[in-house]
Length: 230
Image (cartoon, rainbow, N blue to C red):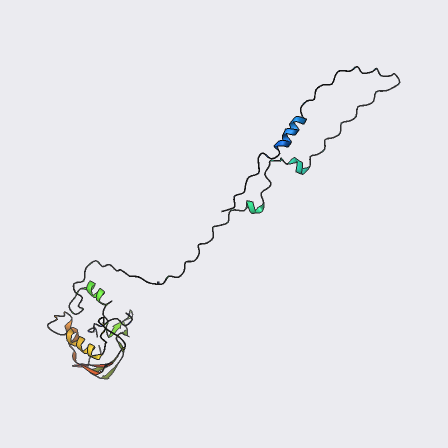
């Protein structure tokens, strides 16, 4: 059923934190430095002689130094303890937003290593050429990857008798020039496939076919000279 050359029926960073002011408390430090300067020595005076009856007063014991408060112990310019949030590692960059689904459009370009020798499927014997032509022309039936026969331009088929197959054709299909596909197109394709003037190298494949009968526009019968299940 490979004789028909009709069109295909069917035929996509962490925030920057300002560092503490290193000059904070400079005025306080300056005041403290002034306060710590040695005051001028007072004028020497002669201490009065102690009375015999008066014992000298004991000097006042030095008061223990007051412990510095925790707040005062801290240097004014020291940085406050980093908060847990500041110590945490920078958050990972947010995941890239999901891209919207794209709709197939435009032109698909396929390159081959050789040019086609002919765009007539009945003339060329080149595998490269046929690979291109099968994207342009269609068949009545074809074999899938499991070698099972699947519908093409013929939707169904049945054996009428031992030498006759009847095929129901797909409707609503047009050739590239707009002409409708029908049973007459099937009969013409079979006749041209075996025409000696075409010099088709595969013409002998249809040798068992003795007649192609048009029953109606959507029905064709193929008769063979002998029983031929293929």
